[in-house]
Image 1 (cartoon, rainbow, N blue to C red):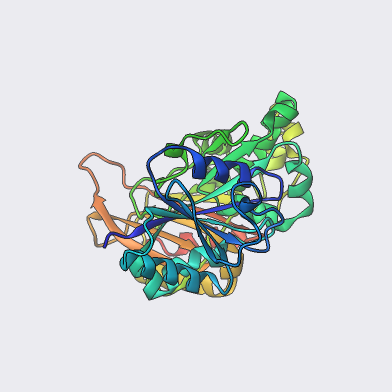
Image 2: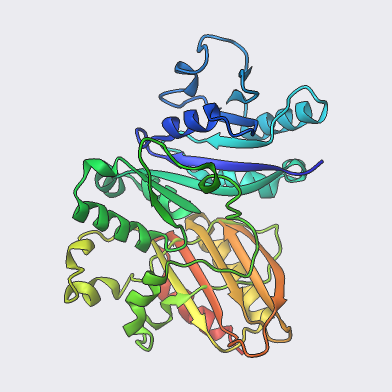
Length: 372
């Protein structure tokens, strides 16, 4: 049986998750979708679409979609869905897991990698984060959970943008980019997002493409040779066992240099915040020593894993003609061999880390020391 794609939907209360889900559930897109709700949600989808006082855990809907609440834990719910699909009792094409407004999507994502039975039935496609433009600044200032959700995202949808001014929206977008330069941002109205932007995003695929917001790199460009910030733009990949559970580090590369560097560039107003969730990039044209890199990343993940949200890299490893691709969530890290470096291609290792108060200097120095 083909793996069932799964999408994790996260975002603070009121950001529009329910609106988006209702649209996904009721639109005639020909796909049968299973929605799994954390039943602690303040507003359940079924308040409008479904009968809310039913005792059934799984509710079949007229268009073939199904809804279920997590009564035990996610693993049990997923196993039960997969089993019913195998037996032909339920028919659905994909799963969407809606986390509660305060949830950390990390452990939900890890379930798909850590648990063999789940990994045999499901494929984690991506983490989508909804951000409410009107209340985002306050939520990001006050709640680490909101910042974490941004750090984990493969795709960010900004809702309620019509309720804020253009400069406010731009400042928010700039801030989100610093927290997570690898997640594309899209402003959406009333949950109107085409399904192509929601599903099959392959955010967890190990591929040789490392998406970092190009402006994020450009903005730091003047610092490339600066001792403290120069390596910001690296994104690294690395050869590691899948067993190490690990969350991407979400540090913003501007940790030490961002803020001052922009004051004279008209960006000053964007930098009144200094979020604990940040991203930074490491880049080098020297090849990595595989053993040294494996030891270093293993040690880092051991110590900082819980604070590492997402990290990903495409690496030039000594001794192989192929790109090495790696990525992780918290302590869980996986790697794979990618395509052969093209004949005239400059072999550059690039890594991006997104995390909470990660020690950028220690990480950058450590990575430098792993180069051949």
